[in-house]
Image 1 (cartoon, rainbow, N blue to C red):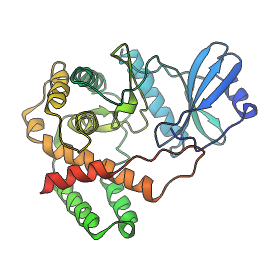
Image 2: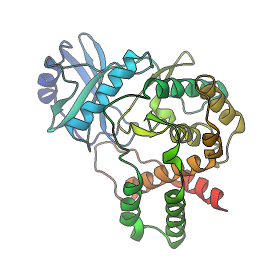
Image 3: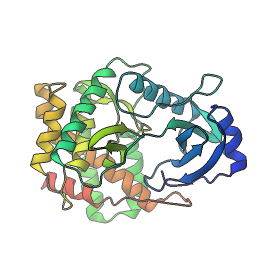
Image 4: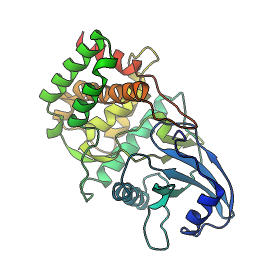
Length: 306
């Protein structure tokens, strides 16, 4: 959501005509986030969010938007994607895939309570149940091979201590059995800045561009590592308990999932430690950039193996 691709009125106006959203009034870059380019777009019919997708094909982006449409129809709180006159969700802008969705009410929270975590747990479980049989299948683009490739790319940028920790954690995760746990389509990026609240109730889950088929427990662990951690990376037991209880009020965990919780926490920490290291050492140029600190996930992994 940093602005990597800048656009002009001259480019945006014909793009918007495909969606029949009225006349363009103004548009503004959205600074939060790190992967794609996002703008608020105001027209004569309302406010929308325009996303220019930087690293996915139009075919992949169409899958994400079809999923978003499915979630919206399944009464999961998320933005409704708009279709072009040709019935497609994905257009082209500045030579890249681009989408338009209705702008939701609300904002993300930098500080969350136990009640916020409970609400999140409920919505994650509802999403998992709705998507258990969703097709077509989509593999995790940040899976094992990505871990191996990214670790190799980062090798010369990291300290000996960091490389030792990284190699040890990858070996551990290769021997783990998360892939045998219950699966569904998962969001795979449910950080606080991807959930909106309006009047202290969740009003929207956004940014589905890492969604894939995956282990449901892993999805909860990703959220826990962000929503239930203190700044020093220690766990807030009250928030963790609220997140899990909210989830289990809709879908109970299997015994195998309970046993694998610590492994899932480590898997989630490894994925985002790697991605933030990659963003830090190999940043993408842009008008606005927002690179997040990888240290919290390194600390989680260091604590886990000591």
